[in-house]
Length: 195
Image (cartoon, rainbow, N blue to C red):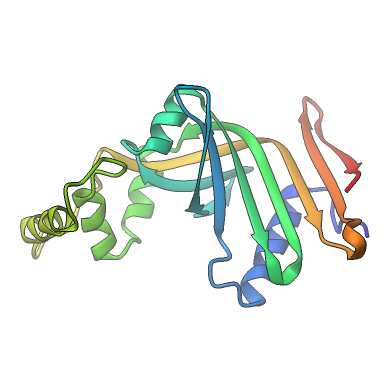
């Protein structure tokens, strides 16, 4: 099997659209791997919120563990897997915060409950109980009742600037098709990898 394009972003956009059309309920979900302050890998799922200017964007609390990891080691890996399609994409690269304006623009599209949750949750911190969190949600709900909820300064986006993108297509007998795109000064080089 061969790839449909020599542009990795064109392929990615095609594949994620296929994933949406095939009924994957969380087709934008990806495992985000980072390195913590002890040099150990950590992993969690995030939702891709866009591909813009050849970068992959997601949003989070800047006080979370993942943000702490990215502050110390600004590199990450992102992996998508769409089981129904037998397709996977692996992305590795540098990370940067997106502009405050982009964070503001996305913030305004979030449901009100999610906005209150971003204010109320001290993400990754230890809680004494669920009641503690629900009390905070109630307090911020009252604070912003009848008002537009501003974006907290501790919440915003990141972009991954890819240096390597791998496309994997499942095949019988586990002889999968794998293609990697490597970023060079002249653009992308493409290599086929053994399964």
